[in-house]
Amino acid sequence: MPLPSPSALTPLGDYLRHEWLPRKQAGWASGSQRHRQWTVDTLCDSRLVDRPIGELTVMEIERYFAERAATPFPSTGQMPARGSIKALYATLKACLGDAHRYGLIPDNPCAKVRLPPDHGAPAQIWSPEQVRAFLAHTADTRQAVLWRTLFATGMRRGEALGLTWRHVDLDAGRLLIARAMLADSRKGNVLYGPPKNHRSLRTISIDPGTVDALRGWKSAVAAEAVSRGDVVTDESPVFVHADGSPMLPAGVSDTFRRQVKAAGLPAIPLHNARHCHISHLLAAGEPIAHVAARAGHSTSAMTLRIYAHVIPGDDARTAARAAEMFEAS
Image 1 (cartoon, rainbow, N blue to C red):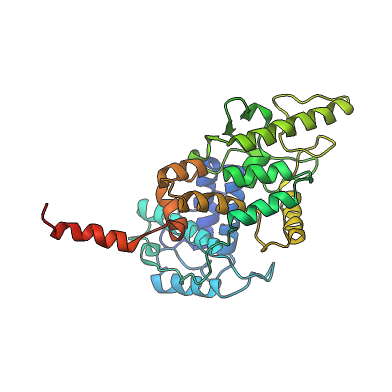
Image 2: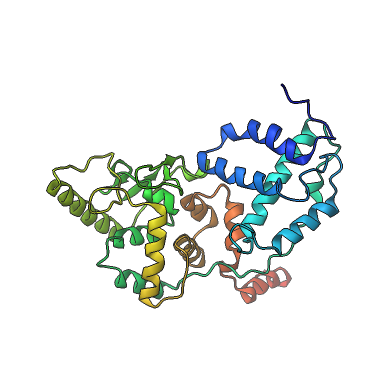
């Protein structure tokens, strides 16, 4: 039996599940589909689920997000990260924005919503000395070249694990980031998808030291393959275990966590290797547009919004420049 046409009286849960999500998800990468499905399921498990989309108010939406930000998730017992709150808000705003565009509701209340303030600290990053100490401590481990590559390029974990040797041009010193291993990959069920967004499909340069590390790694895995009666081809994954099977996201992150602890360094998640790379480039004065392109951010504005706190400033110099307008030439 076909569903009734949506209207302002359609409950939010029905509109999300039966109208908005089915229309949108075909255009998303599989990882985005799962993430958006989580946001829809979470919103449909809230007090807003039965509210008609035409009756939702700014005040009750803000109340929901204030409560959500202060309440642990039942499934994990963990407090919501800022990114989770923003993801839920983005889904609700997009859903109601479509309803407004279709003429179902007079306006989008999310346009006026203010999320609860973020009192969290910026992502912790290591100093260059700490990065060098970690790479020295892990130099003899299976993951040494992977760690070097992540800190040297700012690639996302899945992007690095998605590399094949076809994507690596050692002579030119370049990497093509064309796919990513999905986070829920498991042994016997390794999943790949496109990079996160259209800007994430990119070619980036790598420094000579990282080129040398990758060249040595390729020779080592090729020798292992020969001992197994196998061969490394252009389609072989770059980062593999001794048996030739690809390294997987969850295992890589767990190993990183253990090795950080063993090195006696401040605990950071693996994703913060990316933050280290981007933050150090910006702090060194690299143009934001160049860093955004290297990181695969959708816009330079996104890079600025996340990393503005690490960009150096000299207010005394700025004041001196402003004073030049009062000086005779």
